[in-house]
Amino acid sequence: MDHILINSHNILRWAVLLFGLYAITKSARGLFLKQSYSSNHNLSATLFVASVHLQILIGLLLYVARGWANNFSKMGEIMGDSTLRFWTVEHIFGMLFAAVLVQVGRTKSKKANQDAKKHRSSLVFYTLGFILIIAMIPWPFRGEIARSLWP
Ligand code: HEM
Image 1 (cartoon, rainbow, N blue to C red):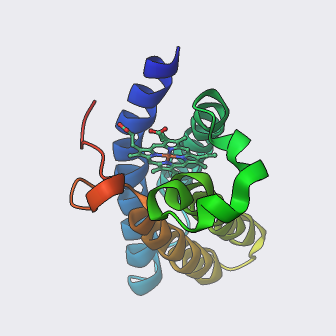
Image 2: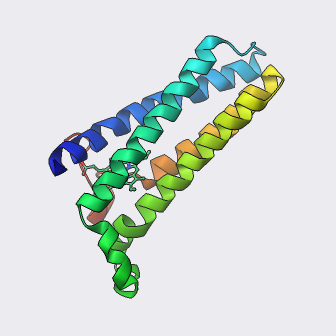
């Protein structure tokens, strides 16, 4: 069970990044080329938001399955160790905050009554969320927390 979750979480990262880039590009083009907000813009946003939500769900399951959630009782020790701190605190809260940014962008974009505002909210919040996601991924060059690019 554990390895199915970690492998899915590893692979789904690429979907999140791909759909993120797609949604950001669509909203940037929409804003700067003054396009009307089309079903394609909506689809690109839906794919990004859905992939982030699914990744968060799998991440939460992994967090419990791998015992990281039990670390809260020994916070002093955790905060002094950069690897334990990354997995217990930084990865989860960084990614949850990124998901909130993406969701705020989606909600603001849906509520906006002008196409330019829809594109701008998407562009700003999806880009901020995307940058945070990139920063919180355990890339292979990241020393002790490094993980592979593919399972
Ligand atoms: C968009 C959001 C996220 C992305 C892109 C992402 C990405 C990744 C990647 C690439 C790995 C390494 C997988 C491997 O070892 O093959 C990983 C591991 C992990 N992630 Fe995430 N993650 C996200 C959100 C979350 C969240 C919200 C949580 C917790 C609630 C979480 C918990 C974990 C855990 C527990 C591991 C495995 C750590 C271990 O080896 O025990 N992830 N994540």
